[in-house]
Length: 135
Image (cartoon, one colour):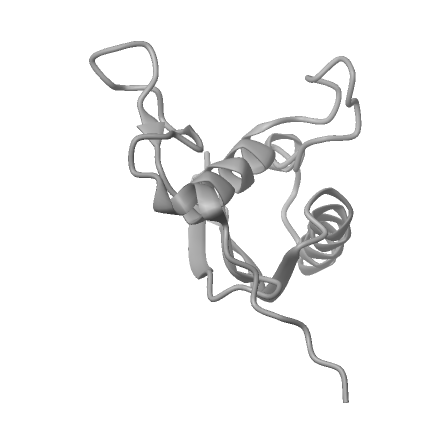
């Protein structure tokens, strides 16, 4: 019977080594580092959702592309398409992420789309929830 061993990120044990950069950029210095893999993954997901496809020259397919839907007529069909599109993009871009729950909610009167994502990382004990509003 095969089983997958739990993966441990060794860099998380070194409290003086930064893993990534925190978002938003509002620290006293240029960037505020984060020191855990879990925080770095969450910031990478935020970056994915805030990026439009085509913004990164060497990776033109990277990005959630959610800003394009803000001024569209929001219907259930659009939200279903958007949810399927994001789910397939997340699987392609972040293959180690297991999507627990992905919901896209709308506020028609305010033209706001809310993305709520519950995720975990394969073979680790890292799990978290991310909620982003697009206005």
